[in-house]
Every structure is written in structure tokens, then in C-alpha cells.
Image (cartoon, rainbow, N blue to C red; front, side, top):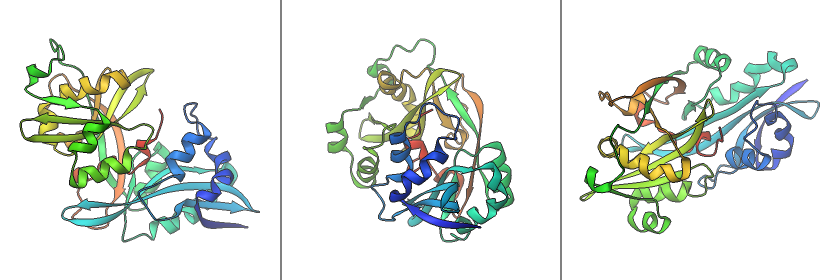
Length: 287
């Protein structure tokens, strides 16, 4: 007999043996705890749903709750992560997912579904959030001088705390603790663009993935400065940016990389371009 329970931070030791089944060597026990069981921006104690058989956790899916300003209103969001079922209990998959599917007032995000998960969630009402990322290499001839690009940047904690205001200040405060987050403030005249990125590796090579930009227009104007700012801490050979954030732009020398992401918006007014990578597993995932 199996049962599904909502679980909080106190259940980490019960869930961790399942998380160890994922084929990654980069994530330690504390990395998993930080990514899935620590959300200082939320007063919601829930961290996921677990399937139990005879008192043992045999399935789990993490839930990362947040509230975002989208389209002029505050929207509740639930980011999904780390879905895993022991093979002998996969027939109970819908039993585990049913409480999540009932969250009709939340937009649900699945930013990194496996091929199997993609098929299942697509059948459960999830639709395409993204299909591709752009890989943005440094342009030939760029030497990194800020004056060349008529702009400047800072990664200083003191500068960020002093210069960020309003919603950007809140976003910085909520994510400053995240192990993977890299924070950059791009400047040009009286314009500012707050950028959050995370390091990643593909085929053993280092990249930086842009999770958020407060002004995408300015980001594209100064994206070489963004790469220069991120290089010291990520050694990134190129930037990854989800294609939906490029609009009609076709960045010079960029190439595409498949990137299936899914979501189930709470209503039609929430479009893919309104959804970024903040408040998700991406902020603490090591890969």
C-alpha cells in the first residue's frame, strides 16, 4: 500500500537516498538540501510530494514555490524539480503527480524534463515553454574594454546592494544566497540591466547560462560586457540564453542547442517570454 504526502525540510534525510539515484557526481548532500529544501524567500513550508511504501520514500518530486510580478499582477508559481520513482513503483506515477495537477491557481514550471518526463507532462496539459537555447560566443576582435561598448558593469556586492532598487533589489536579496548564482549590473548612461547567470558545463566545457535580465534590450546591446563580467568566476567560453528572450534578434555567430522546457500557465495571459529562470532549481543546480 502506498500513500502520497506533502513533505517539508524535515523530510530531507528520508528523501536523500532517492536523490542519490540521479546520475550526477556534482551534487553533494548539502547541494541537494540547498537546492530543494531551502527557500528563504517563501513562507510555504512544503518542499515537495513523496510517495511512501511501508514508511519508506519510493518516489519524489520537488516543488519550489514563489510569487512573481507578471503582467502587472502577482502570480503564484510552482517550479518542479528532481522527479524520481523507484522502478518497482512507477505504476503509481499519477498518484504522485495528482496533487501537483490540482494546483490550478499556480503556474507550473518544468524547466529540465527528461525525455520520459517530457512525454508524460505533455499528456497532462503542459505546453512548450522553450525549445532552444542560443549559444553566444565572444565576437571576433573583442578585447573586453568597457569603453569600446559605451557601457560598464559591476559584480561588487556593495555596488549591487547600493544601486539595485525596487523589484530588482528584492530579487537580488532573494538569490544572493544561491550557490550557483552570479550577479552582474550592466550600465549605460542612466540605464541599468540586472543580470543573473549560473555556470554550467556541456561536454566538459564551461559556459554561463543567463537566467534573468531586467532589461533584455540593454542586455543584447551590452551582452559582450556581460560575458566579460561573468568570465572571472565561470571561465565561460560562451553564454547560453533561451531563444524566447531574443525576440526577433539573430545574434551574430550564435548557434542553437536543443532545450525542451515545459509549463502549465494558470491563465492565458502568462506567455513564455514572461517566465525566467529565477526561483527555480537552476539557481543551485550544479552541472
